[in-house]
Image (cartoon, rainbow, N blue to C red; front, side):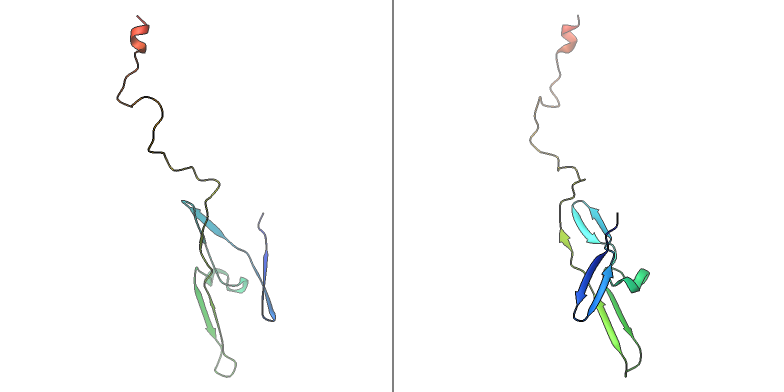
Length: 96
C-alpha cells in the first residue's frame, strides 16, 4: 500500500508519494520533487519559470540516509564453523 505523505512548508501544503529503492542496505529516493513535477522530478530537480514580474524558482534535493533492509541477507562470516573445506569426511570407510 502506498502512503501519501503530507508536508507543510510556510503557508503551502504539499502531498508527495515517496518512492524508495534499496540496494545493499542503502536506501535512496527514486524520485524527488513535488507531486506536480511527475516524471520531471529526479533525485535532484530545479524548476524556474514565468517572466521576471511573476518569476519563481523551486529547488529540491531529498536527503539520503543509510538503513539496513530487512530483506537483505547478513554479510557472510569469515569465521567458519565445522570442518575445514579441505578435510574429507571418513564416511566412505564406514560403508565398507
